[in-house]
Length: 123
Image (tube, rainbow, N blue to C red; front, side, top):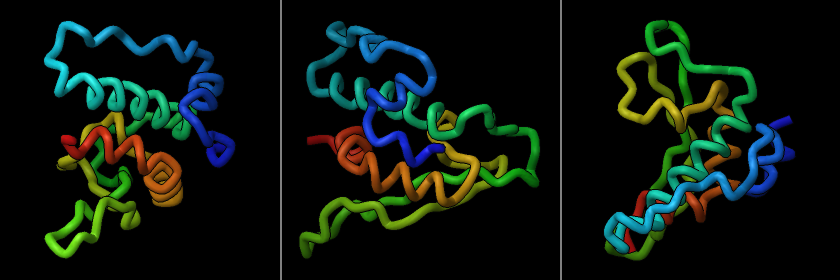
């Protein structure tokens, strides 16, 4: 069950890979390295949460869900998981970070909010 995936290490275990699978990004600018590491981790987490499900980007009738975040405002609203969004084949979200159900997308967004924030928001 996807709710048993509470950490990156849990996701690695679920898909039978070692947490050391993350590549070395040291050749990239230092300001981008953490985002690249976080993206790699989120890809693994999404794969673990989705299990055997693979999005079919040719199927306009198959919904694909992804976490939706409030990125903050001048009033200091901050970064937080707002819920989920869905798209069909014309999605603006990367296929590796989408989910089969809205519940999975919401779970991933809340459970791994810090990782998403570090990936999406340049410090």
